[in-house]
Length: 222
Image (cartoon, rainbow, N blue to C red; front, side, top):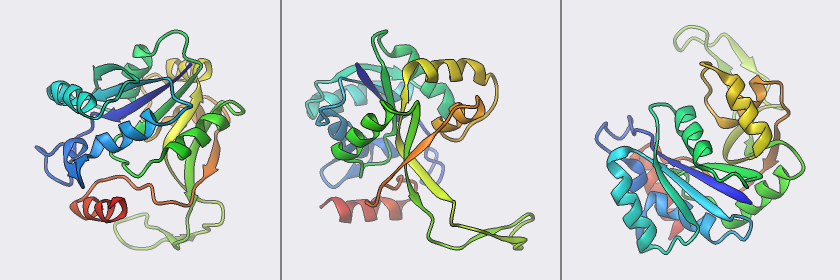
């Protein structure tokens, strides 16, 4: 079985502390609904675990019912940090899950085809993530905005979600993580010495973090 963990428990600091970006309106549906529908329509996904803030559990249930998310298995409460929300999602997965896919609910441009590609890649490698090669020049600023160095970009990638893992390896990596902080799920595997591979994508797949992102996503989804 392949289970998707869709993460929508984060706080939107850039849009305001009281704004829950996952439930903002985007074209004709909430932001998180776009991701839910992409995973619902993907033939390679069997179940969906949705992770939200405590106060949004009823709203999440209503969204899933409104848009016919039949693969929804559980709606659970997330943690203060991303890795705590992922750990909660892992604990909610059924024992027969062999591949687990994590995805930011604030990335509404994900497609069913993208999900299928990452699931198939995870059957060959223990940890995979979608990503794009960097095209901008990258500067390193050691202090403030003063440039210290120009970083060669030829080997640099912007890693996004979905990310997919072979469940046994991912659970083991999470157990070994301890109190260390990570900024994405693949880093959990990296820190434990595991191999992570990137699946290149060309289509936009950015995360909604600002009002401008919401406007751009709206234009792309119409």
